[in-house]
Length: 301
Image 1: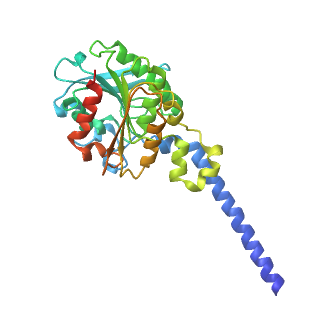
Image 2: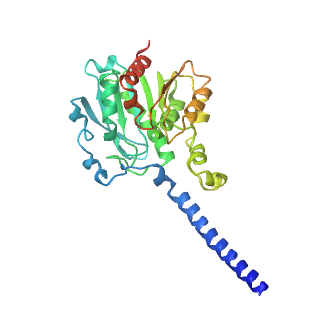
Image 3: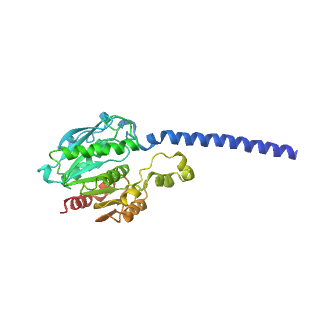
């Protein structure tokens, strides 16, 4: 009888281990092959906002906000066409700084319009924003390598525009966009005036440690995406403004502090902490103080 019990228990444990191993393997394969789709969320996660044409009012076009702008089409090195907007200040755009805005991972450029309105009207900067591959009206599919390549195409477009003062170009990035902007800054820091980072991460592996702790030991096997801003920021010499929402529940604020602490070669670093700032809404929760801080940073002589 006892032998039967032990045999039954052993058989059950064996089957559980087999099925558990299969499920784990399936999970790891899914994460390996679909991690790009998990990171680059081209639509906002709600049924009524699936396509650019379905953006709600005030999220469709700068026209809704009575801002002067032009549609931008940037052709990449591999002949993919990206769409964006160049939104201009009312008074002499070339006399004002231009921010190249790299947006977060979810949703198209239209969802950034309310933020851009404040930047243009209150911070008195022009804003060039171009959707990543596969976002909005931009062609292609997003990957880390392709987005890195595309940033240079966007930057080259800006350098050629007659209303963009090449001596007053700033890069701005929120969340994923912070990693994109940091990468571009590492390649163009002799041509830009400064960098603004808002609620961004140190690296994707560090985010895996934060969000998927149970996968940390396996991340070396399954993770193909890096976006390692921490290593890049150590070599940046340009002025950097860090904007950190202290109530960010997606990216822990200590990662922003880590970036700030490691930007030791920068000629000037500033940290703006927004006490109740959440991940995507810090700019709203800070109010005009947010826009005034960016204005001071970008207009400093």
